[in-house]
Image (cartoon, rainbow, N blue to C red; front, side, top):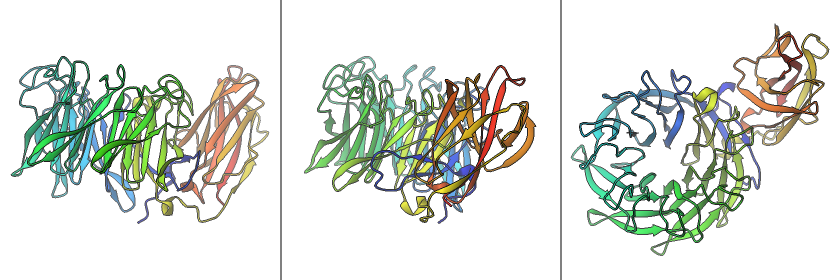
Length: 532
């Protein structure tokens, strides 16, 4: 099956560490009719060939929406935009989402029900005769105002789990989660789960996950191994009832462990965003595995790129021998541009294999805010991209889809020099666009330049603009890399995607320069023939 289409869908990978297997992006997803401040990508989930992405602040009055994508003819196409039948302004429908087969569950924690404001709800949708339709609205038996039921949701087959972090059964804000099961064709509440060590302000069920008949409930503010170190509870269905089978606690003090949760069979990955191994709040991931009937911590995974304040592990994803740990506050492409670090289990050891970034990284995108995996596919979101419009990116770990056919490095051709006007700058590189490698560029001869962007586009043009000549399509260019001038020099690093093999791109830089009539200076251009 061919998963790769037009250039606009091509994304890239910045690979560091031991690259034992291919990792690349396949397509960018943007919500139908999404606009600024929709926050498309605040949540996401994937199963098989279906993806759901939440946009909690979209639609007039900002009740929120959820967007379903399905793989059709090699492309991920949006096949539905879900809205609740009784949604209201500020409900934040889409703040959390889950998908399993042809069912989707969407949380709406600020929804007002008959019991009062912000009591919350979760909505269930099914694909019936090719159309996604709302089939249920879930509320707990003990719903109360200001409880924000639905802040987190998860689904696996006929089981849905909904979090309520403000539940007070074990103390103020101790938290609990509710289990709903499909019985006789109807969704019915079958259990309310509370951790055996639950206490006030634990905020349990802020994050939940489910796989088959196993549920994980986070308790990221609990004091299990130190103040606010965090923990997680595992529940399993036994003899018709849900029973706590383990409490997962880190070997060290961690730091809000379980703020991110993922489960796949006998493995559970917990993110600890406040771990300080590589600086205050740099973050880490903790892996637990079921060994001889007992859950044991098998690894602590610290991204090599993690720095103070990255909050690595705010989101995590796990599938088989691959996992991802977020770092949405990392500054690789400007402040809070975001990254996700990939690990793979090789010969029984978890090895860091690469750092994923989006195809259009910019400051404050918060890429990896949401992560999800299914098989060899993964989704990472950037809810703050483009003025908080948001976007999601599909990756694969399938070497057959990421390979470049052994075509090698490619070539670079310089053009458009000496045009005059505001084309006073010089864009150069000493490297060729080799798929899977980093390529460096330098911008010089703009002594009054402050900052700018390097634009890359599949379209070569020659038209007046910014007091000079535009040589590559700047407006709508799919790749836009920021840089700052320092002592008359700007530097840009570009990770060349495997998926770009055989394509031709045109690059030109635009720099802010108050001395130019238009306030901008331009450079010459480069023709980049990737992997030829």
